[in-house]
Structure formats: structure tokens, C-alpha cells
Length: 275
Image (cartoon, rainbow, N blue to C red; front, top):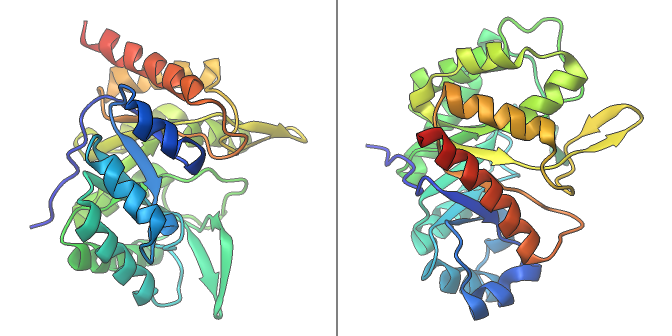
């Protein structure tokens, strides 16, 4: 039986290296923290620090390098390292992106989109099954920010995710900012996406700030959450309900107090949803 995600239904932050010492020295009131898996593969000082953090806060492990939709075989070394990390940290959730990142022996440091076809669905589902079997736990799959779409897709991303959850028992990490970026860049219908995904499969939300480059919204995670994304998040809360919510900030990282304020804004919206 795959263990489902059990994060507390509160707001958390992405914990990055500039804040490790401050968090451990001051133990601020954080609901939970999320870290990137690959930064802790191989153990060492980074893992030692994370284990100290784990003594005080629930931890979610978030991957950026597995390439669930790649056509090359799953990287068994990567999967083994993730298994070891899960055994050491005992995270409340483990997640990955719905993307590909490798071809012909080359690994691309990006999260790349693919056509949502029945063939791709069967392929990704088999890889998720393999990951969940190895980890002995549920994997959360994140919707992607994208800058192009494929004319030969046979379903929408929301429909693709919904069918993945039915076939594999995986959960959904619903990145609200990614959906907003896609509405602006690609004309994706946000309401249709939300209707398509099964609410019970949604285990976590992500919020972040984007950049605008040549008229295109780019998922850079280096700004506060914009009002338009907050508005979409409020709509999502109304339609699906509160879930553990993360503030992501991965470059131009501000003071910890800024992240905590963003998390407090998310918490206020979750609390209001209960009223």
C-alpha cells in the first residue's frame, strides 16, 4: 500500500541554503518546509542539516530531475538516492514535475513539456508505478508551466493528470502559479483545468512569483506572489478546498521574514475559506 501525503494543512516555505542557519537558530513558526531532493543526494553536511530541520518541522521532498515523461529509462541511481533520502528523512510528501528532461543519453537542466496523448499517458503511468513501488509511498505529480503547446495532444493537462491519478494512485501537487502562467502564455482555461482534476487527489499547492520577459510570463520563482495569482488561489480554495500550501522562492532569495510574510498571506486565505 502506498502511503499518502500527510503534510499539515498549513502554509510552508521552500527552505533554501541561505536560511538554514537562521531557521535552526531561531526556530520560527513555520507550518512545514520543502527542499529539493537533488541537493541532498550523497549525504554529507547538507543532509545532516536537513535531519536537524526535520526534528522541528514536517518536511516535503520535491524533485526537479527525475524526468517522468522522458523516453530514456528511469535513472536507477537517481531513484535509489531518492529512496535512501526518504528512508533517512521520512518526509511527509514526495513530489516530482510532469515533464521530460533527457534524450539520447543527454540530460537537459530544464522541465520540458510533451504532448498529452494516450501513448504518453501509458508511458508516464508505468514510470510513476515504478517510482511508487520503489519508494513504497505515494508520489505527487506537479502540473507544468509551459511556453508552447502541442497540436497533436489528445487531452488537456488537467485530463491527463486526472487519468494518471486513476491509473496509478498518485496525487497531484497543484502549482497555482504555473496554471496562471499557462493561462496567460497559452490561453489555458483555468476553470476547465480545475474542473478536470479530482479534488481528492490534490494533496498540496504551490505559489510563487513569475517574471515577464518579452511579453511572456516566465516561472522564475523570484518575486512575491502577484495579486492575480492570489485571486486564482482563492478561487481554487473555493472549488477544491484548503491543502498544504508552499511559498516557492528559488532565486534572488529574500530575507526569511519576507517568505514568512508570504506564507502568512496564504494561511489567512486558507483560514478564511473555513469561515
